[in-house]
Length: 523
Image (cartoon, rainbow, N blue to C red):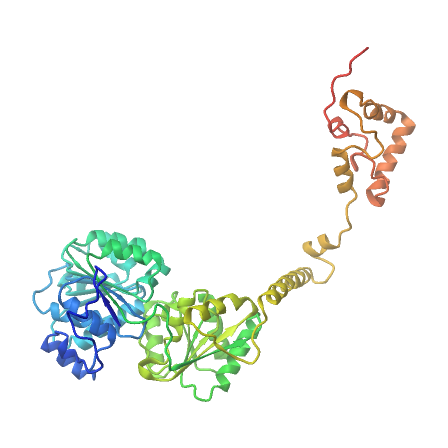
């Protein structure tokens, strides 16, 4: 663990090195909080808790960088409970504000305040989507010591005039990199302008991309940086494997079912998909094949999402198919397996997904289904975690073979689509266009713009033969022959020396004379 002061010097001279024997009683928490922590069964703090809690109690701004599952929530929940023991909230003016990217994370933080604040008489309000505004308004009108919200619902209440933010003393921005991915940064910037400048800000993120670094410079004032792990590291207790599968959806679903059936030690599992529509499709497919499965994605209302999580925690649902809305921060203990039905396009999401298993020292397994087009994503994941993931069976083909196969697959699928749309192999716009013979007018038109092959290469002032050519066609016999030649040349392509094909006798003069000629002068 690293504790860095703003000037870059180490803080270890001020505080002794953190050891495994350090207890919560050494961090400066109040007796009420310590009693609640002991009742919950915890004795020693995690590295992020030991590093962040003392500085939060000193009213310092804190920048915490730690992976999911390291106890980040308690690192700001416990000191906030200690600081909130003095004072009380006024109506519609919360004392503290915690911003979360998803409803599930916000509900989980509320559970932490209920667990560790059992000895406190604090009012906690939860502002998330999918819940009635009236119920949330009643909580705000009584006064909230702790306000936990998603950015969108918070701004909705503020714009309706039901919320005042002038009394916020502590602002917590949790899962900041997830906020960036979900597009909440403009909302957070707007919210920060509504809160007093003298507030204390606690900023937590798993990674530090350049955009998040810019936000820390904007939101934090003389912060203490606490970093407890590498930017992207996986838990050693999780066995990671990959398996090759076809790119067609039915091939992937069949592979997934075989993996679930062949896993003897599987107790429960989370199946991650990249798209919400695939979540519902995979869940229905598993249910039709006799699996006890459910779905969790962002289009579900809040009550359905919380009911699904409760059923999964209690064991009523053994397999939960989810989008990345469930990937970060959810504390679901004893998840034995994680299946990446889709390989995530961002390597950091892979770390967060497989972090749902192997928590608190338990063993877990993570298996990814890899199609030929996922090779570049697998390489990015291996570069991020620092080692190669083991394959079940043969690995997918190399990049060169993959490109060629993908192109052939597109042509094949396009041809099949054209045949299926027309009911046979000979119809369809694409197939008709591909089987059409080469039109002879293309080379003839290209010759029109250049010099005819049988014409002498002369300068413009001596170009007399092209001017006499249309006059000879004006004769009746020649006109008929030339018209017949043009009509026959449309199909046979033998008369490619004709300047224009298919226009009959009405040939515009500018097509017959593509080159602008000077006026004829008389001697």
